[in-house]
Length: 284
Length: 159
Image 1 (cartoon, one colour):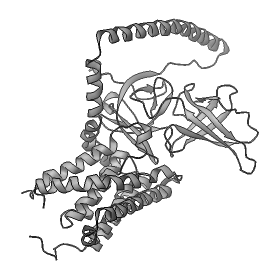
Image 2 (image 1 turned 60 degrees about the vertical axis):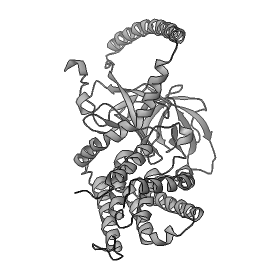
Image 3 (image 1 turned 90 degrees about the vertical axis):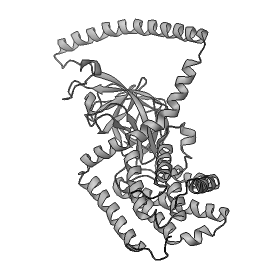
Image 4 (image 1 turned 45 degrees about the vertical axis):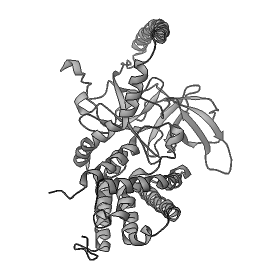
């Protein structure tokens, strides 16, 4: 039987204590950045929740995979083979061009471009609040993942690694409000900065003068100037420019090239300059 | 050692946390109800001597970890609304379901306003109206969640 007058501290003192705890956590985590070990521990503690969250989707996709008819599979196989042939053809051309590029760069005496090392990772969870747009992937420090590592998918840049656990890592999406990225327009090499808006897949270009030559439909690539992303990966396409002279800068919105709300597998990149190296499972 | 009915209690929290991070299409995702806050509020109203501000703090920190926000942000919001619910649980219990739904909408809205304001302090977050839509959907889900959780509470004898 619960009594009306329970023992223990009163509700108000509990509130004050809990509020103090929250403020202290915010202060220590945000200002002092001193919670990394605790975060890592708590992250591995909640990993089961993340795996449970994708379980229904996995079961569904396994199910739809197993009830596919032979005909469907044959069709899919044919389409994939055709696609592979096309890509192989393009790859031959690419190898030729990259060799040529290397020779020309050697002639010019400028630094040669090195290919990045890659690893495939699966998305295990999403966080889609406007103030925290993140993905959780199933690779961590055991695979050589490091903080600040660039992450792309088959179409374009997805984001960068924000924190790493031993078996999972958190990717900050380019459309997160706290994420900025240095870009260059493909058409005319204009350098711009893009900040996330908090709406998934939407970016906003900052400090664009009204006289800028940017146009709607322009493709924006990474410029490599931020130091995080290697140069030349597609990021976003400009959708709207508002040149209202009463504003200090032109308002330029862009949509990300990769479908951030549907991404399921991502590629982790290790640029040549990175100290860490990928650790593949079969090497162990 | 454990109090009776601890397992169903923890399982409902777990389900709420899983529902919070489950991947969904972007069009529905905007309206995802605030499951953790809803479940927490139910248990506070039903068992105020057992589930209270401490639980809110723990669930808030777990939410922060799962959503990757700065630790303590969601905890702050949940602690404040759970104080309100724990302070007035007798009054809320006597409300009719539609009255409760209106109250829940306000509580979820207040929680989200606190989280938003904390984010403004931390990194100058921009106002996005979509963040506040779940206050409505959460409230609507209360019509279904309240009887369900009550059934669970009676079935498993959580006291």
